[in-house]
Length: 412
Image (cartoon, rainbow, N blue to C red; front, side, top):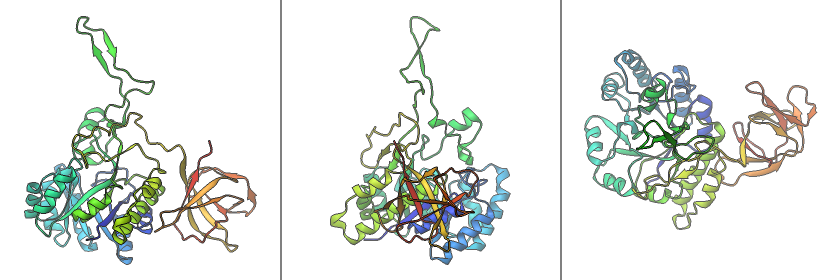
C-alpha cells in the first residue's frame, strides 16, 4: 500500500502551523486576490513565510491561483507565478486554461495541479490535463468510487490524483457556481462567494386557477434551505481510498478556525496511520467521534458510495455543535509552570476542557481549577474574550507544546 498525503487548508500562516502540528503533510493556501477565498488572511509575505516554514520542517505547500481570471488579472498572476517559482513552492493549483499557460511560462519549475474547479470527472479529462502539463488532478466531488477506480486504472501512471475527503460541499458543479454573482454581485469564481446556497429562502407557488394568489411552500420561521448541503465526511471510507492508490486526501476549509483544523487534521492523520499499521482492525468510529465535536453541518458521504444518494440536504442550513467549542490555544508557560492560553470563548473555573494532543486520537480531559490574570497573576473566576490575542493562565494536567488546542465542553 502507498501511504497517501494528508493535505490541509491554510487560511493564514498561523493556521498552516496548526495544520502541520496536527499531522498535515502539506497545506494549500493562496492570496485573496488570486485564489477562491478572497477573505483568507494571506498576502504575498504570508505565502513566502508559509513556504519557507514548511520546507524547514520537511512539509509541502501548494499555492492556489484557481480563479477564472478576467484579462486585467493576468499581470498580477505573472508576478505571483514568478515569485512562487523563485520560492520553489511545491505546486500551483489552477483551473483556468489561460492561467495554466501563464504558469508554464512564468513558473516553469513548479508542478501544476488542476483544481477541482476544472471539473475533472473522467480519465479522458485527466489524460487531457496530463498532456497539457499537469502533474496532479483534483477530482470533482461528483464522482463515486467506481468511477474513481476506473480513472485510477486508466490514467497515466505518473499523474497524481487528489480527492476531497472532508468539508463543505458547494451547490455549484465542482464548485463552479454563478448564483452568488447573480444575487449579490459577488463572484464565486473570483473567490468572493456570498454563500447564497446557505441562505434561507421563502418559496411560493401560484394557484393554477387563481393567478396572483401565491401559496407558500412549507417552511419554518427560519425560511427554507433549498440549496444548502451537509458536509462531506469520508472517514469510514479511508481504507477504500488508500487501497485505490489515491495520492492525496484533501480537507476543505481555509476559512475555518485553528480548532477545526486541529480536530479534523488530527482525526484523519490518526485514521491513515492506524490503517497503514493494522488494516484488519480499522475502527472509524473513534475518529468520527472526534470529528463530530467540531462546529459542522450534518455529515454525508455525498456520491462516493452511491450515485443515487439523496441524504445530503442540510435543512437547518447552519453550522452547529451543541456540546463543544474552541477553548483556546497554548502560547507557552510562565516561570511557575502555568500555561499561558490564548482564549477563544468564555472560560470559567469549573469548566470541563479537553487537550487535543497531536498524534493521539484520545483527548486529555481536565477541569479548570484556577485561572490567573496574565498581567497581574491574580486569581480570577472567569475570563471573556475581548481584544484579539487575549490570554489567561491555567494549570494543565500534561505538558503541552506551543500551539496545542484546547476544547471547551459547553454547559447545558
